[in-house]
Image 1 (cartoon, rainbow, N blue to C red):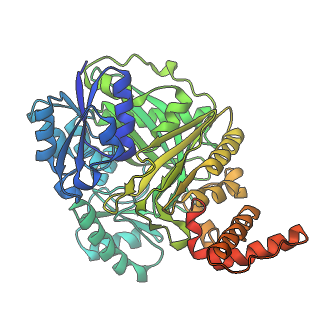
Image 2 (image 1 turned 135 degrees about the horizontal axis):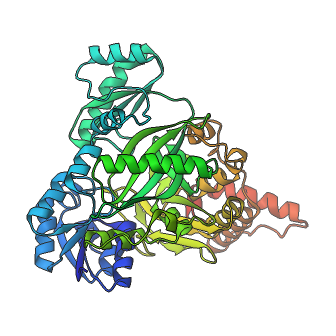
Image 3 (image 1 turned 120 degrees about the horizontal axis):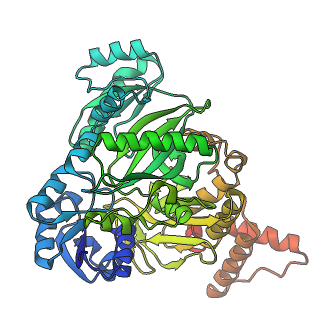
Length: 509
């Protein structure tokens, strides 16, 4: 087993990996950019090395600097987390050349599954279900125009090297195709350094259901159930749950066995996720494979009781996977929300800044993977993910109730967050009834989900107190004590309207 592991990442995922390392008696090494010098992952690690200025291209994406830190620290292995270099085969190959173990899949599997067109081609050749579309990159607009006409609108343009919604455009009619083609290619080039795109048939209102795989170097490959990831904004997941509320034992087995077949096609080991689209008739289609640990892995861990990072480390060290398929048991239900520093009332605009107060939720069934602390300044340079709030309960109904309670307790001041957005989503009748699909969030936002709500009684009382304090500090007459609760509420409402621009300082966004 390794004595020391370098975590080539930052934020909550770096802290999460380091926690498992500490439980296993493994020392940890952090890397950090200039703006992350005081970050939580740096404070938590046993050692930390500066790798460059704030831009990720000069720090977290700089392979030479990461490997130099590994050599100086004496780390025997590197865990990439997710994002940054996690799915970069050049990084995995560089680790191998440097004699450092890459905690992830083999380079060949990363290259095959990292190309959306190559992985689609492999699945088609194996007779596995895929979304209708091309299995190669489209080189010209003329070719895109022809294929779109053959498939039939609506279609989806996708970046071949893509992920996270970058380089994706839905095209509902021919007149939109030229603009979507240009935009998708440009966005793909900026995000991945590769402008190649391919085309798929757009399936109306599908569910996004993914299967978690785990395999070792000795040919053992199993699936750990599924995750429902249909709640997405701009093709980026925001709420995930395990198990999916519409997947029964039979469908789970068929999807799991298909995912294992895809993994074996790639010669896969370590943790990976096979993503599917699921239509209303229960038909599923291979979408892509993510060759890394997923952001949403906590819900699988809560339901199966398996520490996936621990298994990743054991597998990378050459150990045999002790789990067999029949050992995997799913118990209860788990739901996760991604807490971002962003303002839902302002089109989810990023909200960097100083966290002046942080009161996280606690109690039974609560898990919070976080990379922040009170007094820390959220930088503008990186993804604004603050934490992942996940809950577990005996069933989905109880999990929803527990997550509502946890969100109600979660207080972050000094910046805006999307906590209020999740509170409203969890109250939506379609979410409660599990009537979900990948366009759910867009529909509820279009219906006015984040419109300004009337002040709560708590807001009104706080506003009244603010008005009284203002009067005292400025030596003006304080409002007279009202004769009834209604009068108090009226005074509070008026004060709240006057104070609304500074409301962010009273409560979390």
